[in-house]
Image 1 (tube, one colour):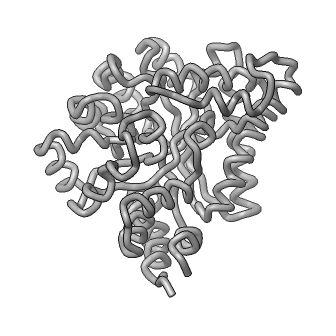
Image 2 (cartoon, helix red, strand yellow):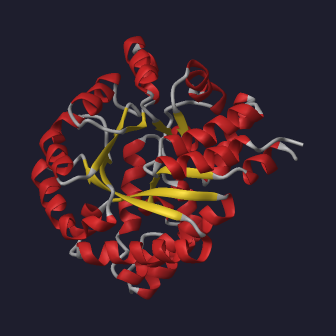
Image 3 (cartoon, helix red, strand yellow):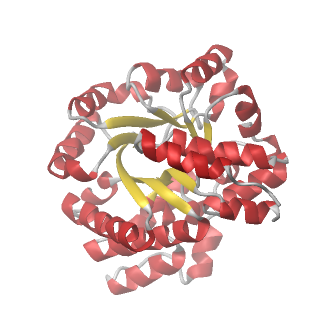
Amino acid sequence: MNIKQFIQALPKAELHVHIEGTFEPELMFEIAKRNHIAIPYENVDAVRQAYDFHNLQSFLDIYYAGAGVLLHEADFYDLTRAYLERCREDNVVHTEIFFDPQTHTARGVAFETVINGIVRACREAGQQWGISTRLIMCFLRHLSEESAFETLNQALPYKEHIIGVGLDSSELGYPPSKFERVFAQARTEGLLTVAHAGEEGPPKYVYEALDLLHVRRIDHGVRAEEDEALMARLIAEQMPLTVCPLSNLKLKVFTEMKKHNLRRMLQRGVLVTVNSDDPAYFGGYMNRNFEALAEALDLSAEEIKTLCANSFRASFLSEAEKEEWIRKIESFHVE
């Protein structure tokens, strides 16, 4: 069994993936045609050529343009179903999916339409393939606190389908502190909290996510390494970081994969996990992220196993479910 086969064989949990970021060009064209929406690209190849980003904002511009073709429950079902098929191919047995309702409600698409389509696909994946899912609703940090409160209120009738709230979109200039009151209300409603911090933003944003939003996980967090006191705290508290290697490379957080700090953080005892973020845009789903890391950083089989086990440790599964998957991972050996 080579490393690629080993990665394939190991069960994995994905904790940082945006469902809108799994929108492959082929499906985008199909849904745009179905909904009679014109998009500014002649063909699939033209879309792929546009996926040459120089920073987070240049990616977000095309990301939001693509999401504009999603109008009906069937569209959100098809989008989610396609992602879950990729999970099945990569042996991702559990996934905690981000969705951005404001991206859609701002266009007049009802919250109900969005969540019903996503939930239907998740339910089917559980029944047909045994993939377990959780949904995390993200607030767009470039929008107002008022808009976030409105979105939280829209979500409450569907709370049975939503395990937590997150914070995503443009990081620089939009600190977590802006949403302290919204997150406090979400926690009062029994929702768990996570937040993007320390990708393009400074370590200060990670501190704010921890101390003001009381998050259970930091999404990205790679810039925490710039602050030694913060690193010590992350290690001591075993605060998970949901790291997205191919995303970091594509958005120029690191200039090459060999310079990525994931292995250093792992060796220091940080609870790091591997995730795909927006895989349709960044060049790969879960296994491709593992393969790129293994190749560039010369990860050992034991380090790969630890990363897979960490994905369950950091998940919102029950302790019994976590332990069951971790036992399965620890029983794997490279032949």
